[in-house]
Figure (cartoon, one colour):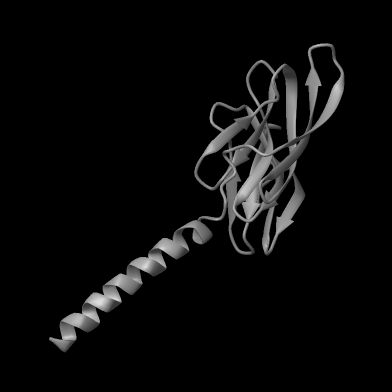
Length: 151
């Protein structure tokens, strides 16, 4: 990342890379690099954000808030969704594949655990869901247009 004190690449999907960089003040920010442009990723209200995994346009990682609590997140290109395991003190979302997210969390007793989650916030590729109805709509319009041209 241009101007960063340190940059760590963490995940790749196609030609898109995600990772974290540290600014001159020592704060971490996530980044997305598409081969020509860097985009900074900062979860709302976070003091630090790390981008760790990517699958298509879905990014997972961690963010820290002022009191030092760490949360996992899913970012779909426009919205950040917090991924906290119930009862967890710290949550790390570390990888994503399709609608599956893996990570680790620490419980209130200080024990670390792994998790596999399939949150509702991970969208099925919209193109698949929208393609069939859109195609059907075009077929109806085509039939109306052909019928109109014949009369």
